Structure formats: C-alpha cells, structure tokens
Image (tube, rainbow, N blue to C red):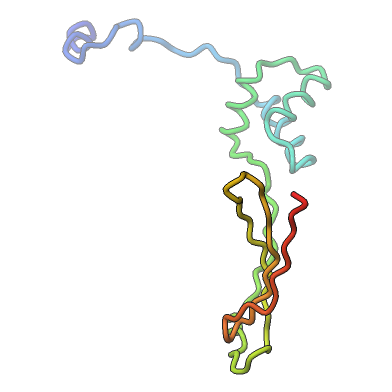
Length: 138
C-alpha cells in the first residue's frame, strides 16, 4: 500500500508521518545535569537549572525538566523518623472516688447578654462536680 493511501486510511497527515527529529544530542548537558544532581541531592530541576545557567550553559527550563525526568533523577526524600513499636498500654482502671480529677472551662451567656465562664473540677469516677469557680471578667 502506498504511503498516501495508508495515511488516508488512518486519517494521519503525511508530513507528521515523514517527520524526523533534528534535535541535538544532549549528552554533555545530561552528563553535567547528572553530576550536579549527584553533588546536590536535595536540589530539584529548578535549582539545578539555575546552577547550569551559572556555569554558562544556557538552556530552556522545560528542556532541563525533560532531561531531568528522562535521566530518572528525583529529589532524595528524607526518611521519616521511626515509629514506636508495640501496643499502647490501656489507661489505669479507676475504682475509687478522688483517684483522678478533670478540669474544664464552661462558657455561657445570660439573657442580658453578659458572658461568663466557669472552671469545673469533676471527679472522673463519681462524675460529681467538686468545685465550680465562676469568672465574669470576660
């Protein structure tokens, strides 16, 4: 089958099929990019692009990004801190009154619009309010 007829069957432009890339071989740039990435492991392609420009290699940042990805380069991730291994111990069983207390502030508003808050001290076993200290300074 001719090229013209095959392109018509697959609905492709002949110029696209015949196109041959004229892109230069970027071996030198790739090598320099790899060297910089090995020296500066925490730098991504944006920072490496700046370092390349400082060394006199003028290139488009999109080209730097493409070469960075094609070379399989990536920012080295820091390892996370180790997690504590083991089971958490359950809290102690409360059996007697006054063994543990909880403190909490309670806010409210009167019908007149005046606000107040109360510091509550509660026994965790009996759920009894041991003290309530009002504060009307707010």
